[in-house]
Image 1 (tube, rainbow, N blue to C red):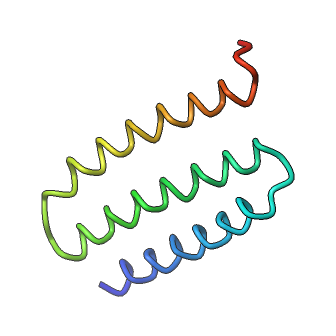
Image 2 (cartoon, rainbow, N blue to C red; image 1 turned 90 degrees about the vertical axis):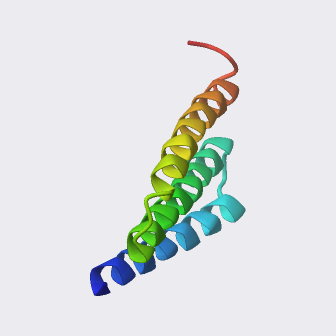
Amino acid sequence: MEIIDIGIGAIVLAMAVATYRILIGPSAADRGAASDVVFFGFVGLVAMMGIRLDTDLVVDIVVVCSLIGFLAALSLARLITGGKR
């Protein structure tokens, strides 16, 4: 379980750095990318805790959250570019 704990610590560190980028980021694109890192870091934390607690329930949660996060990233990219392809 030490590897899982190290992984959780690394994800929390990445989320902290991304939160700093959300607060300080000079552009909307920086903030959008950092918010994706925070969201998928949270999904990673849920997956790691599912492994740590040895439950199968989190697989469904992680899949649904990943799909929602992907669609949100697409929408944010479309918003930043002004709807241009």
